[in-house]
Image 1 (tube, one colour):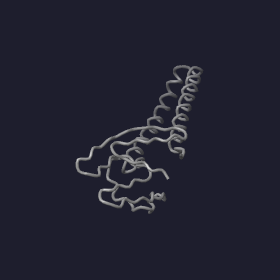
Image 2 (cartoon, rainbow, N blue to C red; image 1 turned 45 degrees about the horizontal axis):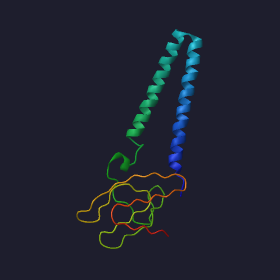
Image 3 (cartoon, rainbow, N blue to C red; image 1 turned 120 degrees about the vertical axis):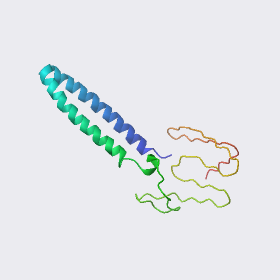
Image 4 (cartoon, rainbow, N blue to C red; image 1 turned 45 degrees about the vertical axis):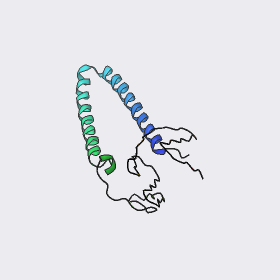
Length: 146
């Protein structure tokens, strides 16, 4: 099973940010204690302006260019066919679905697929760690491992 690099990278960034925030708070606390309340107030006002500007920049990034069309809830348009690459250089999974009402899914996918009249959608969630495998089935399904 492939290690989830994006998830691990996200956890490292979150923890690094938390450690940096705690270190900054401790450092500012020590500094403000040494310089006195009047000077600390002036410095805190200047720091507050820069924190607000950084927050504004992050908010604009999140609204504008920080999200893909799928994450923003808009239709990204038609996707490339099987085996073709996307604009980012990543290859699409080579899958096919011959037959009436057949569905082929490859790669990271989320969502619901209905293949017939009166189909019931069953949504299940599972999480695996290490070398574990998860098999989930709703209704009549067959799992064939190669």
